[in-house]
Image 1: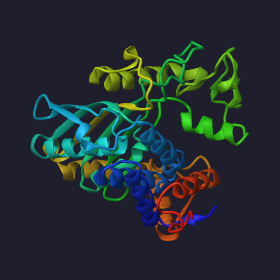
Image 2: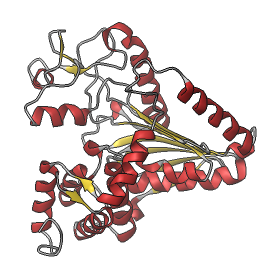
Image 3: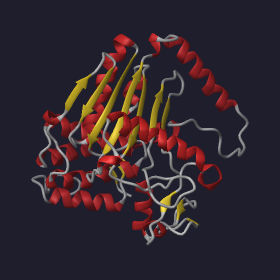
Image 4: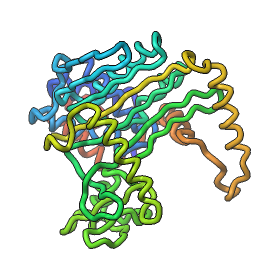
Length: 351
């Protein structure tokens, strides 16, 4: 795959979003978060999403105007954001900034966000806060989409419902980004489009058979993505998925019961300042100790030592910043089409 400079990608995407109607701060934030997703290796939730975002801006299904955001501050630490389908990366960044300001005074801040457009890669938001010795938490669901069946059922009810958390550490910070399903919607779509099989049976067909063929998801009757834990322990992933639904859509007061049809998200964002609890140094002492214990554990496979969450992503980020980000051909093709439709034609690596 051809590699592309991260800064050039940010500049190109920002210009495309501006031409599609997004105001500068929205365009720049969205471009930065998408590129950050690719820098961490989450290629299904990085630049690949730009094509869909641009189409939704053009169709009026997403907004690029920060003026549509309505903020209701209920207490000094709790707020409700109504995003009116403003581009999600901008909304989540605004929510994190709001929470960070509250945490500086009160030790924590929390925002419940409804009617956001899609919010991209959750891990992409974490590093700046972790580097400031803060603990960010992000939970997300999409009330307009159903792809995961409840444990013991066959019909799709909810989404993979990811949870992300950043844990500061002097030696090795943790960047956690996990779904409450075995795989994501993006992985199913990407594998199906490539005509390939999944690396592991993660689909439950509409007839109840476990499958590694994404075509079974799109068949009739429709299949579903297995919850985290699959058939053996899927009750645990199911419970966690419901928890995320409650802390996102239910807490924000807008969800599946409202029947939304726009690609979007319900989100819970929190920032915690350890200094207001047991103390920053004590927090770092404990997380460093835990990391060392993990690294010192005897490996089951000598060729595959223990890795902490986010460790490989941060290593990949250093590589990609130095040598460029490899983009899949379908992403490159979509970028070429977007550039060709814009005033940027002939001035970017995509034409």
